[in-house]
Amino acid sequence: MELLLQQVLAGLATGAIYASMALAVVMIYQAIDHLNFAQGEMAMFSTFLAWQMLQWGWPYWAAFVGAVVLSFVGGVAIERILFKPIQNAPILSQLAAFIALYGILNSSAGWIWDFNIKTFPSPFGSAPLFGERLVSTHQAGMIGVTLLMLALLYFFFRGSRLGLAMRAAATNPESARLVGIRVGWMIALGWGMSAAVGAVAGMLIAPVVFLEPNMMLGVLLYGFAGAVLGGLSSPGGAVAGGFAVGVIENLAGTFIPYVGRELKLTIALVLIVAVLMFKPSGVFGRTVVSRV
Amino acid sequence: MTSQSRETIALASEPPRARAIARPSLRQILIALAVLVAVVVPFVLKSFFIFQLTLVMVYGLAILGLNLLTGFNGQFSLGHSAFYGIGAYTAAILMEQLDIAYYWTLPCAGAVCFLVGFLFGFPALRLQGLYLALATFALATAMPQILKFHPLEPWTGGVQGIVILKPDPPSGVPLNADQWLYFFTLAVLLVMFAGAANLATSRTGRAIMAIRDHPIAAATMGINTALYKTLTFGVSALYTGVAGALGAIAIQFVAPDSFTFLLSVSLLVGLVVGGVGSIPGSLFGGVFVLFVPNIAERVSTGLAGAIYGVILLLVIYVMPSGAAGFVRFAATRLKSKGKLR
Image (tube, rainbow over all chains, first blue to last red; front, side):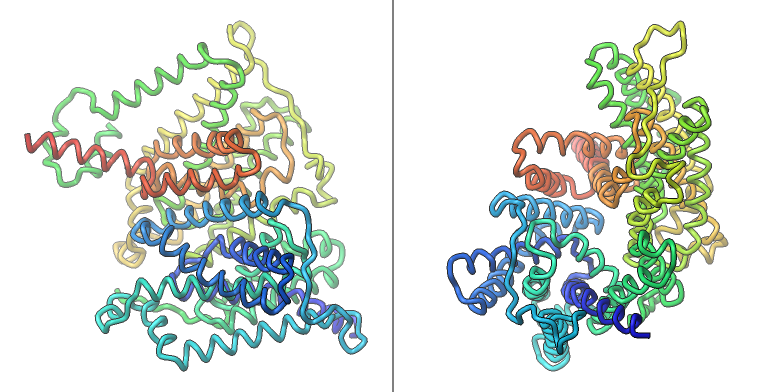
Protein backbone atom coordinates (compact mmCIF):
# COMPACT_ATOMS: atom_id res chain seq x y z
CA MET A 1 0.00 0.00 0.00
CA GLU A 2 2.81 2.35 0.92
CA LEU A 3 4.57 1.46 -2.33
CA LEU A 4 1.44 2.26 -4.27
CA LEU A 5 1.09 5.64 -2.57
CA GLN A 6 4.73 6.44 -3.17
CA GLN A 7 4.51 5.53 -6.82
CA VAL A 8 1.35 7.58 -7.29
CA LEU A 9 3.06 10.60 -5.72
CA ALA A 10 6.14 10.14 -7.88
CA GLY A 11 3.86 9.77 -10.87
CA LEU A 12 2.07 12.99 -10.01
CA ALA A 13 5.40 14.74 -9.82
CA THR A 14 6.41 13.66 -13.34
CA GLY A 15 2.82 14.14 -14.43
CA ALA A 16 3.06 17.81 -13.45
CA ILE A 17 5.67 18.24 -16.20
CA TYR A 18 3.39 16.66 -18.76
CA ALA A 19 0.38 18.56 -17.45
CA SER A 20 1.96 21.98 -17.84
CA MET A 21 2.97 21.10 -21.40
CA ALA A 22 -0.46 19.64 -22.13
CA LEU A 23 -2.00 22.91 -21.02
CA ALA A 24 0.11 24.88 -23.50
CA VAL A 25 -0.78 22.36 -26.21
CA VAL A 26 -4.51 22.74 -25.61
CA MET A 27 -4.22 26.52 -25.50
CA ILE A 28 -2.94 26.67 -29.04
CA TYR A 29 -5.32 23.96 -30.14
CA GLN A 30 -8.20 26.16 -29.01
CA ALA A 31 -6.85 29.08 -31.00
CA ILE A 32 -5.82 27.42 -34.27
CA ASP A 33 -7.39 23.97 -34.27
CA HIS A 34 -4.11 22.09 -34.86
CA LEU A 35 -1.48 20.61 -32.63
CA ASN A 36 1.72 22.61 -32.71
CA PHE A 37 4.65 20.23 -33.10
CA ALA A 38 7.08 23.05 -32.42
CA GLN A 39 5.47 23.88 -29.09
CA GLY A 40 8.14 22.11 -27.06
CA GLU A 41 10.94 23.79 -28.96
CA MET A 42 9.30 27.18 -28.44
CA ALA A 43 9.21 26.48 -24.71
CA MET A 44 12.83 25.34 -24.80
CA PHE A 45 13.87 28.52 -26.60
CA SER A 46 12.02 30.65 -24.03
CA THR A 47 13.80 28.84 -21.23
CA PHE A 48 17.13 29.53 -22.87
CA LEU A 49 16.20 33.22 -23.07
CA ALA A 50 15.48 33.19 -19.34
CA TRP A 51 18.77 31.40 -18.71
CA GLN A 52 20.61 34.03 -20.74
CA MET A 53 19.03 36.81 -18.68
CA LEU A 54 20.04 35.01 -15.48
CA GLN A 55 23.58 34.81 -16.83
CA TRP A 56 23.49 38.57 -17.30
CA GLY A 57 22.80 38.82 -13.57
CA TRP A 58 19.07 39.55 -13.62
CA PRO A 59 17.14 38.42 -10.52
CA TYR A 60 15.06 35.25 -11.05
CA TRP A 61 11.63 36.85 -11.25
CA ALA A 62 12.81 39.61 -13.58
CA ALA A 63 14.17 36.94 -15.94
CA PHE A 64 10.94 34.97 -15.52
CA VAL A 65 8.74 37.91 -16.50
CA GLY A 66 11.17 38.94 -19.24
CA ALA A 67 11.09 35.48 -20.79
CA VAL A 68 7.29 35.27 -20.61
CA VAL A 69 6.86 38.68 -22.27
CA LEU A 70 9.44 37.92 -24.95
CA SER A 71 7.82 34.56 -25.64
CA PHE A 72 4.43 36.19 -26.02
CA VAL A 73 5.83 38.66 -28.55
CA GLY A 74 7.74 35.85 -30.25
CA GLY A 75 4.63 33.68 -30.49
CA VAL A 76 2.64 36.51 -32.09
CA ALA A 77 5.52 37.20 -34.46
CA ILE A 78 5.79 33.56 -35.54
CA GLU A 79 2.09 33.49 -36.37
CA ARG A 80 2.20 36.79 -38.27
CA ILE A 81 5.38 36.09 -40.21
CA LEU A 82 5.40 32.33 -40.77
CA PHE A 83 1.89 30.99 -40.55
CA LYS A 84 -0.38 33.76 -41.82
CA PRO A 85 0.95 33.41 -45.39
CA ILE A 86 0.06 29.71 -45.47
CA GLN A 87 -3.21 29.83 -43.56
CA ASN A 88 -5.07 28.50 -46.61
CA ALA A 89 -2.63 25.68 -47.35
CA PRO A 90 -3.79 22.10 -46.67
CA ILE A 91 -3.58 20.95 -43.05
CA LEU A 92 -0.77 18.51 -43.72
CA SER A 93 1.34 21.25 -45.28
CA GLN A 94 0.86 23.37 -42.18
CA LEU A 95 1.90 20.37 -40.14
CA ALA A 96 5.10 20.12 -42.18
CA ALA A 97 5.66 23.83 -41.50
CA PHE A 98 5.48 23.05 -37.77
CA ILE A 99 8.12 20.40 -38.29
CA ALA A 100 10.25 22.96 -40.13
CA LEU A 101 9.86 25.41 -37.24
CA TYR A 102 10.88 22.62 -34.89
CA GLY A 103 14.11 22.08 -36.81
CA ILE A 104 14.88 25.78 -36.98
CA LEU A 105 14.37 26.44 -33.26
CA ASN A 106 16.14 23.29 -32.12
CA SER A 107 19.21 23.73 -34.22
CA SER A 108 19.57 27.49 -33.71
CA ALA A 109 19.29 27.05 -29.93
CA GLY A 110 22.09 24.50 -30.16
CA TRP A 111 24.09 26.91 -32.28
CA ILE A 112 23.63 29.92 -29.98
CA TRP A 113 23.88 28.21 -26.59
CA ASP A 114 25.56 24.87 -27.56
CA PHE A 115 24.35 21.39 -26.67
CA ASN A 116 25.97 21.09 -23.23
CA ILE A 117 23.59 20.39 -20.39
CA LYS A 118 22.98 23.42 -18.19
CA THR A 119 21.39 23.67 -14.76
CA PHE A 120 18.44 25.96 -14.32
CA PRO A 121 17.52 27.32 -10.88
CA SER A 122 14.17 26.70 -9.24
CA PRO A 123 12.37 29.45 -7.33
CA PHE A 124 11.02 26.88 -4.87
CA GLY A 125 14.29 25.22 -3.86
CA SER A 126 14.78 21.48 -4.09
CA ALA A 127 14.48 20.37 -0.47
CA PRO A 128 12.15 17.40 0.13
CA LEU A 129 8.63 18.46 0.97
CA PHE A 130 7.45 17.63 4.54
CA GLY A 131 10.57 15.52 4.99
CA GLU A 132 9.32 13.04 2.35
CA ARG A 133 11.84 12.05 -0.29
CA LEU A 134 9.34 11.56 -3.05
CA VAL A 135 8.11 15.02 -3.75
CA SER A 136 10.48 17.95 -3.57
CA THR A 137 9.38 21.52 -2.92
CA HIS A 138 10.09 22.26 -6.55
CA GLN A 139 7.74 19.55 -7.76
CA ALA A 140 5.06 20.70 -5.35
CA GLY A 141 5.60 24.26 -6.58
CA MET A 142 5.35 23.06 -10.16
CA ILE A 143 2.03 21.33 -9.47
CA GLY A 144 0.82 24.51 -7.75
CA VAL A 145 1.84 26.79 -10.61
CA THR A 146 0.24 24.50 -13.19
CA LEU A 147 -3.04 24.53 -11.31
CA LEU A 148 -2.80 28.32 -10.87
CA MET A 149 -2.25 28.82 -14.62
CA LEU A 150 -5.20 26.58 -15.31
CA ALA A 151 -7.41 28.66 -12.99
CA LEU A 152 -6.24 31.94 -14.54
CA LEU A 153 -6.87 30.65 -18.06
CA TYR A 154 -10.26 29.37 -17.02
CA PHE A 155 -11.30 32.77 -15.73
CA PHE A 156 -9.79 34.50 -18.74
CA PHE A 157 -11.73 32.36 -21.21
CA ARG A 158 -14.97 32.26 -19.24
CA GLY A 159 -15.02 35.71 -17.68
CA SER A 160 -13.37 38.22 -19.96
CA ARG A 161 -14.60 39.81 -23.17
CA LEU A 162 -11.34 39.07 -24.94
CA GLY A 163 -11.48 35.45 -23.87
CA LEU A 164 -15.01 35.16 -25.24
CA ALA A 165 -13.89 36.74 -28.52
CA MET A 166 -11.02 34.26 -28.79
CA ARG A 167 -13.30 31.32 -28.18
CA ALA A 168 -15.73 32.62 -30.79
CA ALA A 169 -12.95 33.07 -33.34
CA ALA A 170 -11.82 29.50 -32.81
CA THR A 171 -15.23 27.80 -32.89
CA ASN A 172 -16.81 29.71 -35.74
CA PRO A 173 -14.51 32.10 -37.60
CA GLU A 174 -17.11 33.29 -40.14
CA SER A 175 -19.76 34.25 -37.61
CA ALA A 176 -17.14 35.76 -35.32
CA ARG A 177 -15.95 37.96 -38.17
CA LEU A 178 -19.52 39.06 -38.85
CA VAL A 179 -19.95 40.33 -35.31
CA GLY A 180 -16.77 42.36 -35.61
CA ILE A 181 -14.12 40.15 -34.05
CA ARG A 182 -10.72 40.41 -35.73
CA VAL A 183 -10.22 36.70 -36.18
CA GLY A 184 -6.66 36.96 -37.52
CA TRP A 185 -5.47 38.84 -34.47
CA MET A 186 -7.30 36.49 -32.12
CA ILE A 187 -5.32 33.61 -33.64
CA ALA A 188 -2.08 35.57 -33.25
CA LEU A 189 -3.03 36.28 -29.65
CA GLY A 190 -3.66 32.55 -29.12
CA TRP A 191 -0.15 31.83 -30.41
CA GLY A 192 1.27 34.47 -28.09
CA MET A 193 -0.55 33.12 -25.06
CA SER A 194 0.40 29.56 -25.77
CA ALA A 195 4.04 30.60 -26.21
CA ALA A 196 3.83 32.36 -22.84
CA VAL A 197 2.25 29.32 -21.14
CA GLY A 198 4.93 27.20 -22.80
CA ALA A 199 7.63 29.52 -21.44
CA VAL A 200 6.33 29.08 -17.89
CA ALA A 201 6.17 25.32 -18.42
CA GLY A 202 9.71 25.28 -19.81
CA MET A 203 11.10 27.23 -16.86
CA LEU A 204 9.38 24.86 -14.44
CA ILE A 205 10.53 21.74 -16.26
CA ALA A 206 14.16 22.83 -16.81
CA PRO A 207 15.28 22.37 -13.18
CA VAL A 208 14.11 18.74 -13.36
CA VAL A 209 15.26 17.58 -16.80
CA PHE A 210 18.13 20.13 -17.16
CA LEU A 211 18.42 22.67 -19.90
CA GLU A 212 19.56 21.59 -23.37
CA PRO A 213 18.11 21.91 -26.86
CA ASN A 214 16.58 18.43 -26.88
CA MET A 215 15.05 18.59 -23.41
CA MET A 216 11.50 18.98 -24.64
CA LEU A 217 11.08 16.16 -27.14
CA GLY A 218 9.94 13.49 -24.67
CA VAL A 219 8.03 15.98 -22.56
CA LEU A 220 6.13 17.34 -25.52
CA LEU A 221 5.11 13.89 -26.74
CA TYR A 222 3.76 12.91 -23.35
CA GLY A 223 2.19 16.33 -23.03
CA PHE A 224 0.40 15.58 -26.32
CA ALA A 225 -0.62 12.19 -25.04
CA GLY A 226 -1.99 13.79 -21.87
CA ALA A 227 -3.84 16.46 -23.82
CA VAL A 228 -5.41 13.95 -26.16
CA LEU A 229 -6.29 11.62 -23.31
CA GLY A 230 -8.00 14.42 -21.42
CA GLY A 231 -9.67 15.79 -24.51
CA LEU A 232 -8.32 18.56 -26.70
CA SER A 233 -11.34 20.75 -26.13
CA SER A 234 -10.90 20.92 -22.40
CA PRO A 235 -7.92 22.65 -20.66
CA GLY A 236 -8.85 21.09 -17.33
CA GLY A 237 -9.06 17.68 -18.98
CA ALA A 238 -5.63 18.20 -20.52
CA VAL A 239 -4.08 18.92 -17.13
CA ALA A 240 -5.81 15.88 -15.62
CA GLY A 241 -4.65 13.84 -18.63
CA GLY A 242 -1.06 14.97 -18.14
CA PHE A 243 -1.11 13.90 -14.49
CA ALA A 244 -2.74 10.61 -15.49
CA VAL A 245 -0.02 9.84 -18.04
CA GLY A 246 2.65 10.37 -15.38
CA VAL A 247 0.88 8.14 -12.86
CA ILE A 248 0.07 5.37 -15.36
CA GLU A 249 3.65 5.33 -16.62
CA ASN A 250 4.98 4.97 -13.09
CA LEU A 251 2.50 2.35 -11.94
CA ALA A 252 2.99 0.24 -15.08
CA GLY A 253 6.74 0.30 -14.49
CA THR A 254 6.35 -0.84 -10.89
CA PHE A 255 3.46 -3.24 -10.83
CA ILE A 256 3.42 -5.11 -14.11
CA PRO A 257 6.03 -7.78 -13.60
CA TYR A 258 8.64 -8.81 -16.14
CA VAL A 259 7.72 -6.50 -19.02
CA GLY A 260 6.91 -3.45 -16.91
CA ARG A 261 10.23 -1.71 -16.56
CA GLU A 262 11.45 -2.14 -20.10
CA LEU A 263 8.18 -1.35 -21.80
CA LYS A 264 6.60 1.14 -19.43
CA LEU A 265 6.13 3.85 -22.04
CA THR A 266 4.64 1.38 -24.45
CA ILE A 267 2.25 0.14 -21.81
CA ALA A 268 1.23 3.68 -20.91
CA LEU A 269 0.52 4.51 -24.53
CA VAL A 270 -1.38 1.28 -25.13
CA LEU A 271 -3.53 2.05 -22.09
CA ILE A 272 -4.22 5.53 -23.42
CA VAL A 273 -5.25 4.15 -26.78
CA ALA A 274 -7.46 1.63 -25.00
CA VAL A 275 -9.16 4.46 -23.12
CA LEU A 276 -9.66 6.32 -26.38
CA MET A 277 -11.44 3.26 -27.79
CA PHE A 278 -14.23 3.95 -25.34
CA LYS A 279 -14.02 7.72 -25.30
CA PRO A 280 -12.86 8.67 -28.81
CA SER A 281 -12.81 12.39 -28.02
CA GLY A 282 -10.84 12.10 -24.82
CA VAL A 283 -12.12 11.55 -21.31
CA PHE A 284 -13.26 15.14 -20.72
CA GLY A 285 -13.59 16.20 -24.34
CA ARG A 286 -16.70 17.34 -26.12
CA THR A 287 -17.88 15.06 -28.90
CA VAL A 288 -18.16 17.09 -32.05
CA VAL A 289 -21.46 16.49 -33.79
CA SER A 290 -21.50 17.30 -37.47
CA ARG A 291 -24.50 18.17 -39.54
CA VAL A 292 -25.03 16.08 -42.65
CA MET B 1 -5.91 2.17 -70.28
CA THR B 2 -5.31 2.93 -66.65
CA SER B 3 -3.71 6.26 -67.26
CA GLN B 4 -6.51 7.30 -69.56
CA SER B 5 -9.20 6.71 -67.02
CA ARG B 6 -7.04 8.53 -64.49
CA GLU B 7 -7.08 11.52 -66.73
CA THR B 8 -10.81 11.44 -67.06
CA ILE B 9 -11.04 11.75 -63.33
CA ALA B 10 -8.44 14.48 -63.13
CA LEU B 11 -10.03 16.50 -65.90
CA ALA B 12 -13.65 15.82 -65.22
CA SER B 13 -14.62 19.10 -66.84
CA GLU B 14 -12.95 18.23 -70.15
CA PRO B 15 -15.20 16.87 -72.87
CA PRO B 16 -14.88 13.10 -73.33
CA ARG B 17 -13.61 13.30 -76.92
CA ALA B 18 -10.03 13.46 -75.61
CA ARG B 19 -10.38 9.80 -74.72
CA ALA B 20 -11.17 8.62 -78.19
CA ILE B 21 -7.75 9.54 -79.56
CA ALA B 22 -5.62 6.43 -79.67
CA ARG B 23 -2.11 7.93 -79.63
CA PRO B 24 -0.23 7.74 -76.31
CA SER B 25 -1.09 10.42 -73.78
CA LEU B 26 1.43 12.88 -72.40
CA ARG B 27 1.44 10.98 -69.14
CA GLN B 28 2.34 7.70 -70.85
CA ILE B 29 5.17 9.38 -72.77
CA LEU B 30 6.51 10.92 -69.54
CA ILE B 31 6.39 7.58 -67.72
CA ALA B 32 8.20 5.85 -70.58
CA LEU B 33 10.87 8.58 -70.60
CA ALA B 34 11.30 8.34 -66.82
CA VAL B 35 11.75 4.57 -67.00
CA LEU B 36 14.25 4.97 -69.84
CA VAL B 37 16.30 7.46 -67.82
CA ALA B 38 16.08 5.20 -64.76
CA VAL B 39 17.48 2.28 -66.79
CA VAL B 40 20.38 4.27 -68.26
CA VAL B 41 21.41 6.11 -65.08
CA PRO B 42 23.21 3.25 -63.22
CA PHE B 43 25.62 2.77 -66.12
CA VAL B 44 26.69 6.42 -65.96
CA LEU B 45 26.92 7.18 -62.26
CA LYS B 46 29.27 6.19 -59.45
CA SER B 47 28.43 3.33 -57.10
CA PHE B 48 27.60 5.52 -54.12
CA PHE B 49 25.16 7.59 -56.10
CA ILE B 50 23.49 4.44 -57.42
CA PHE B 51 23.10 3.33 -53.82
CA GLN B 52 21.52 6.66 -52.94
CA LEU B 53 19.10 6.40 -55.83
CA THR B 54 18.14 2.93 -54.61
CA LEU B 55 17.32 4.48 -51.26
CA VAL B 56 15.30 7.23 -52.96
CA MET B 57 13.16 4.51 -54.51
CA VAL B 58 12.85 2.74 -51.16
CA TYR B 59 11.66 5.91 -49.44
CA GLY B 60 9.41 6.71 -52.39
CA LEU B 61 7.75 3.33 -51.95
CA ALA B 62 7.35 3.84 -48.20
CA ILE B 63 5.84 7.28 -48.82
CA LEU B 64 3.51 5.77 -51.39
CA GLY B 65 2.30 3.44 -48.65
CA LEU B 66 1.58 6.36 -46.37
CA ASN B 67 0.00 8.18 -49.30
CA LEU B 68 -2.48 5.37 -49.91
CA LEU B 69 -3.67 5.73 -46.33
CA THR B 70 -3.51 9.50 -45.87
CA GLY B 71 -3.88 10.84 -49.37
CA PHE B 72 -6.50 8.44 -50.67
CA ASN B 73 -8.32 7.33 -47.55
CA GLY B 74 -7.90 10.41 -45.34
CA GLN B 75 -6.59 8.49 -42.35
CA PHE B 76 -3.66 10.08 -40.60
CA SER B 77 -0.67 8.04 -39.44
CA LEU B 78 2.45 8.78 -37.45
CA GLY B 79 3.11 5.07 -37.14
CA HIS B 80 4.51 4.12 -40.52
CA SER B 81 8.03 3.90 -39.14
CA ALA B 82 6.72 0.83 -37.27
CA PHE B 83 5.52 -0.87 -40.46
CA TYR B 84 8.79 0.04 -42.18
CA GLY B 85 10.64 -1.46 -39.21
CA ILE B 86 8.55 -4.63 -39.20
CA GLY B 87 9.25 -5.09 -42.91
CA ALA B 88 12.97 -4.52 -42.43
CA TYR B 89 13.20 -6.91 -39.49
CA THR B 90 11.15 -9.58 -41.26
CA ALA B 91 13.58 -9.49 -44.15
CA ALA B 92 16.63 -9.47 -41.91
CA ILE B 93 15.45 -12.32 -39.68
CA LEU B 94 14.40 -14.47 -42.62
CA MET B 95 17.73 -13.95 -44.39
CA GLU B 96 19.92 -14.31 -41.32
CA GLN B 97 18.17 -17.03 -39.32
CA LEU B 98 16.41 -19.10 -41.95
CA ASP B 99 18.74 -18.49 -44.90
CA ILE B 100 15.90 -17.52 -47.18
CA ALA B 101 16.82 -15.80 -50.45
CA TYR B 102 16.44 -12.02 -50.35
CA TYR B 103 13.73 -11.86 -53.03
CA TRP B 104 11.47 -14.18 -51.06
CA THR B 105 11.64 -11.88 -48.05
CA LEU B 106 9.68 -9.15 -49.84
CA PRO B 107 6.38 -11.05 -50.12
CA CYS B 108 6.84 -12.30 -46.55
CA ALA B 109 7.48 -8.77 -45.25
CA GLY B 110 4.49 -7.55 -47.23
CA ALA B 111 2.23 -10.28 -45.85
CA VAL B 112 3.31 -9.72 -42.24
CA CYS B 113 2.84 -5.97 -42.53
CA PHE B 114 -0.50 -6.35 -44.25
CA LEU B 115 -1.71 -8.45 -41.36
CA VAL B 116 -0.38 -6.09 -38.69
CA GLY B 117 -1.75 -3.07 -40.53
CA PHE B 118 -5.12 -4.70 -41.09
CA LEU B 119 -5.41 -5.59 -37.41
CA PHE B 120 -4.28 -2.13 -36.37
CA GLY B 121 -6.96 -0.73 -38.62
CA PHE B 122 -9.68 -2.05 -36.32
CA PRO B 123 -8.97 0.13 -33.29
CA ALA B 124 -8.21 2.95 -35.72
CA LEU B 125 -11.81 2.75 -36.94
CA ARG B 126 -13.02 4.43 -33.78
CA LEU B 127 -10.52 7.26 -33.91
CA GLN B 128 -10.22 10.28 -36.14
CA GLY B 129 -7.75 13.05 -36.86
CA LEU B 130 -5.46 13.85 -33.98
CA TYR B 131 -6.74 10.98 -31.86
CA LEU B 132 -5.75 8.57 -34.61
CA ALA B 133 -2.43 10.40 -34.81
CA LEU B 134 -1.88 9.63 -31.14
CA ALA B 135 -2.76 5.96 -31.53
CA THR B 136 -0.37 5.56 -34.47
CA PHE B 137 2.23 7.55 -32.59
CA ALA B 138 1.95 4.99 -29.79
CA LEU B 139 2.73 2.30 -32.36
CA ALA B 140 5.77 4.24 -33.58
CA THR B 141 7.11 4.73 -30.05
CA ALA B 142 6.46 1.15 -29.05
CA MET B 143 8.29 -0.41 -32.01
CA PRO B 144 11.94 0.35 -31.08
CA GLN B 145 11.22 -0.71 -27.51
CA ILE B 146 9.67 -3.99 -28.60
CA LEU B 147 12.62 -4.65 -30.92
CA LYS B 148 15.00 -4.08 -28.00
CA PHE B 149 12.90 -6.21 -25.65
CA HIS B 150 15.12 -8.82 -23.96
CA PRO B 151 13.12 -12.04 -24.49
CA LEU B 152 13.06 -11.34 -28.26
CA GLU B 153 16.81 -10.87 -28.49
CA PRO B 154 17.60 -14.27 -30.04
CA TRP B 155 15.67 -13.15 -33.11
CA THR B 156 16.04 -9.38 -33.19
CA GLY B 157 19.61 -9.13 -31.93
CA GLY B 158 18.53 -6.55 -29.32
CA VAL B 159 20.19 -3.14 -29.41
CA GLN B 160 22.92 -4.48 -31.71
CA GLY B 161 20.51 -5.21 -34.54
CA ILE B 162 21.25 -7.62 -37.38
CA VAL B 163 23.87 -7.40 -40.11
CA ILE B 164 22.92 -8.99 -43.42
CA LEU B 165 24.94 -9.70 -46.54
CA LYS B 166 24.50 -7.78 -49.73
CA PRO B 167 22.88 -10.00 -52.38
CA ASP B 168 25.09 -10.87 -55.35
CA PRO B 169 23.73 -10.51 -58.87
CA PRO B 170 22.77 -13.87 -60.40
CA SER B 171 25.66 -15.44 -62.27
CA GLY B 172 25.92 -14.42 -65.89
CA VAL B 173 24.48 -10.94 -65.36
CA PRO B 174 27.16 -8.36 -66.14
CA LEU B 175 26.29 -6.00 -63.28
CA ASN B 176 27.96 -5.19 -59.97
CA ALA B 177 26.09 -5.64 -56.69
CA ASP B 178 24.97 -1.99 -56.46
CA GLN B 179 23.66 -1.93 -59.99
CA TRP B 180 21.87 -5.24 -59.52
CA LEU B 181 20.20 -4.04 -56.34
CA TYR B 182 19.22 -0.84 -58.12
CA PHE B 183 17.50 -2.75 -60.91
CA PHE B 184 15.88 -5.14 -58.49
CA THR B 185 14.47 -2.19 -56.51
CA LEU B 186 13.41 -0.46 -59.72
CA ALA B 187 11.50 -3.54 -60.83
CA VAL B 188 9.72 -3.86 -57.49
CA LEU B 189 8.99 -0.14 -57.53
CA LEU B 190 7.46 -0.23 -61.02
CA VAL B 191 5.25 -3.19 -60.17
CA MET B 192 4.05 -1.62 -56.95
CA PHE B 193 3.48 1.84 -58.43
CA ALA B 194 1.50 0.31 -61.26
CA GLY B 195 -0.49 -1.62 -58.68
CA ALA B 196 -1.23 1.54 -56.73
CA ALA B 197 -2.25 3.41 -59.88
CA ASN B 198 -4.60 0.59 -60.81
CA LEU B 199 -6.01 0.45 -57.32
CA ALA B 200 -6.66 4.19 -57.35
CA THR B 201 -8.72 4.03 -60.53
CA SER B 202 -10.62 0.86 -59.69
CA ARG B 203 -14.00 0.53 -58.05
CA THR B 204 -12.20 -0.15 -54.76
CA GLY B 205 -10.10 2.97 -55.21
CA ARG B 206 -13.17 5.12 -55.78
CA ALA B 207 -14.74 3.67 -52.65
CA ILE B 208 -11.58 4.46 -50.69
CA MET B 209 -11.59 8.05 -51.92
CA ALA B 210 -15.32 8.44 -51.30
CA ILE B 211 -14.69 7.56 -47.66
CA ARG B 212 -12.04 10.28 -47.51
CA ASP B 213 -14.28 12.90 -49.05
CA HIS B 214 -17.45 12.22 -47.14
CA PRO B 215 -17.63 9.17 -44.89
CA ILE B 216 -21.33 9.50 -44.15
CA ALA B 217 -22.30 9.86 -47.80
CA ALA B 218 -20.04 6.93 -48.69
CA ALA B 219 -21.71 4.72 -46.09
CA THR B 220 -25.13 5.79 -47.35
CA MET B 221 -24.18 4.69 -50.85
CA GLY B 222 -23.54 1.20 -49.60
CA ILE B 223 -19.77 1.28 -49.16
CA ASN B 224 -18.65 -0.90 -46.28
CA THR B 225 -16.54 1.81 -44.66
CA ALA B 226 -15.14 -0.37 -41.87
CA LEU B 227 -13.93 -3.02 -44.31
CA TYR B 228 -12.39 -0.54 -46.75
CA LYS B 229 -10.70 1.47 -44.03
CA THR B 230 -9.08 -1.56 -42.40
CA LEU B 231 -8.10 -2.97 -45.81
CA THR B 232 -6.52 0.34 -46.78
CA PHE B 233 -4.58 0.28 -43.54
CA GLY B 234 -3.38 -3.19 -44.44
CA VAL B 235 -2.39 -2.33 -48.01
CA SER B 236 -0.68 0.84 -46.87
CA ALA B 237 1.32 -1.13 -44.30
CA LEU B 238 2.14 -3.70 -46.99
CA TYR B 239 3.69 -1.05 -49.24
CA THR B 240 5.68 0.49 -46.42
CA GLY B 241 6.72 -2.96 -45.18
CA VAL B 242 8.05 -4.01 -48.59
CA ALA B 243 9.94 -0.71 -48.70
CA GLY B 244 11.36 -1.54 -45.27
CA ALA B 245 12.52 -4.96 -46.47
CA LEU B 246 14.16 -3.41 -49.55
CA GLY B 247 15.77 -0.77 -47.35
CA ALA B 248 17.19 -3.44 -45.02
CA ILE B 249 18.65 -5.36 -47.98
CA ALA B 250 20.16 -2.17 -49.42
CA ILE B 251 21.66 -0.87 -46.17
CA GLN B 252 22.60 -4.42 -45.03
CA PHE B 253 21.84 -3.60 -41.44
CA VAL B 254 18.84 -3.18 -39.18
CA ALA B 255 18.81 -1.73 -35.65
CA PRO B 256 15.90 -0.67 -33.43
CA ASP B 257 16.83 3.00 -33.36
CA SER B 258 16.57 3.40 -37.13
CA PHE B 259 12.81 2.96 -36.86
CA THR B 260 11.80 5.63 -34.40
CA PHE B 261 9.06 8.20 -34.54
CA LEU B 262 11.47 10.48 -36.44
CA LEU B 263 11.30 8.18 -39.44
CA SER B 264 7.53 8.59 -39.43
CA VAL B 265 8.01 12.34 -39.40
CA SER B 266 10.38 12.17 -42.39
CA LEU B 267 7.90 10.05 -44.29
CA LEU B 268 5.18 12.56 -43.48
CA VAL B 269 7.36 15.44 -44.70
CA GLY B 270 8.08 13.48 -47.87
CA LEU B 271 4.35 12.94 -48.35
CA VAL B 272 3.56 16.64 -48.00
CA VAL B 273 6.44 17.77 -50.21
CA GLY B 274 5.65 15.22 -52.90
CA GLY B 275 1.95 15.92 -52.89
CA VAL B 276 -0.78 14.32 -50.82
CA GLY B 277 -2.81 11.96 -52.97
CA SER B 278 -0.35 11.86 -55.87
CA ILE B 279 1.31 8.59 -56.83
CA PRO B 280 4.33 9.95 -58.78
CA GLY B 281 4.66 12.70 -56.14
CA SER B 282 5.70 10.02 -53.65
CA LEU B 283 8.97 9.55 -55.54
CA PHE B 284 9.70 13.26 -55.35
CA GLY B 285 9.05 12.94 -51.61
CA GLY B 286 11.68 10.19 -51.53
CA VAL B 287 14.18 12.51 -53.22
CA PHE B 288 13.48 15.22 -50.63
CA VAL B 289 13.73 12.87 -47.66
CA LEU B 290 17.07 11.47 -48.79
CA PHE B 291 18.90 14.49 -50.20
CA VAL B 292 17.73 17.61 -48.37
CA PRO B 293 19.13 16.61 -44.94
CA ASN B 294 22.46 15.87 -46.66
CA ILE B 295 22.45 19.22 -48.41
CA ALA B 296 21.63 20.98 -45.13
CA GLU B 297 24.47 19.11 -43.44
CA ARG B 298 26.88 20.20 -46.14
CA VAL B 299 25.91 23.89 -45.94
CA SER B 300 26.53 24.06 -42.20
CA THR B 301 26.98 21.22 -39.76
CA GLY B 302 25.98 23.25 -36.70
CA LEU B 303 22.85 24.72 -38.23
CA ALA B 304 21.82 21.67 -40.30
CA GLY B 305 18.41 21.43 -38.61
CA ALA B 306 17.71 25.11 -39.18
CA ILE B 307 18.67 24.96 -42.84
CA TYR B 308 16.54 21.86 -43.32
CA GLY B 309 13.66 23.76 -41.71
CA VAL B 310 14.16 26.81 -43.91
CA ILE B 311 14.29 24.70 -47.08
CA LEU B 312 11.13 22.87 -45.99
CA LEU B 313 9.34 26.15 -45.27
CA LEU B 314 10.36 27.58 -48.65
CA VAL B 315 9.09 24.47 -50.40
CA ILE B 316 5.76 24.77 -48.59
CA TYR B 317 5.49 28.49 -49.44
CA VAL B 318 6.19 27.87 -53.11
CA MET B 319 4.18 24.64 -53.40
CA PRO B 320 1.53 24.54 -50.67
CA SER B 321 0.05 21.34 -52.08
CA GLY B 322 3.33 19.62 -52.83
CA ALA B 323 5.22 19.02 -56.05
CA ALA B 324 2.27 17.23 -57.63
CA GLY B 325 -0.05 20.14 -56.86
CA PHE B 326 2.50 22.53 -58.30
CA VAL B 327 2.81 20.57 -61.54
CA ARG B 328 -0.97 20.39 -61.84
CA PHE B 329 -1.24 24.14 -61.23
CA ALA B 330 1.45 24.89 -63.82
CA ALA B 331 -0.19 22.58 -66.37
CA THR B 332 -3.59 24.23 -65.97
CA ARG B 333 -1.96 27.64 -66.30
CA LEU B 334 -0.18 26.68 -69.52
CA LYS B 335 -3.29 25.08 -70.95
CA SER B 336 -5.52 28.09 -70.32
CA LYS B 337 -2.88 30.40 -71.86
CA GLY B 338 -2.80 28.24 -74.96
CA LYS B 339 -6.56 28.47 -75.28
CA LEU B 340 -6.58 32.25 -75.05
CA ARG B 341 -4.21 32.48 -77.94
